[in-house]
Image (cartoon, rainbow, N blue to C red; front, side, top):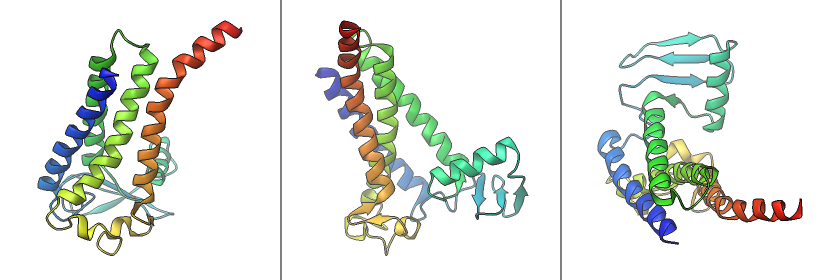
Length: 193
C-alpha cells in the first residue's frame, strides 16, 4: 500500500514538473512544431525526414526495415509526426518509471510486477503530462482545453479530452491493475496445476 502511494505521488509530481518544463520548452506550439529537432512525417504514401534545425524535408525509403518501423510508429501516434525530442522525453520518463518502480517495490514484489508498474508509469505519464501541459500553458489553460483550440488533437476529440489521452490513461491504470492481480493469478495457477 505504501509503495502504491509513493508510486502515484511521484507520478503526479513528475507529471506536474515535466508538463511545466515542456510548456517552457514548446510555448504555444505543441508537438515540438518549432523546436530544432529531427522530425519524420508520413502522409500515407511518402515518408519524409527533416533534419535537426533544418527547413528541408528529404524523402526516406519507407520500404526498408527502418522506414517500415517509422511508418508503424507514426501510425501508433495517430498519424502525428515522430520527433526525436519526444522520443528522448519518452526515454527519460521510462527511465524514471523504472527508478520509481524499483525503489518503491524492490524486495516486495517480483521483477515482472515492477516492470509492469514501470510501464504503467510511462503510459500514465503520456496521458497526465500531456493533459497538464494544456492546463499549465498560458496560451491554453483549462478554458481552452477544447478541440477548436488544439488542432493537433481535434480529429480525435471525445467529449472532454482527446481519445488518445483517455485510452492511454485507461491502459496505464489497467497495467497497474494487472501488476496487482497477476501474482494472485500465478499463485492460484501453481495451486491448481
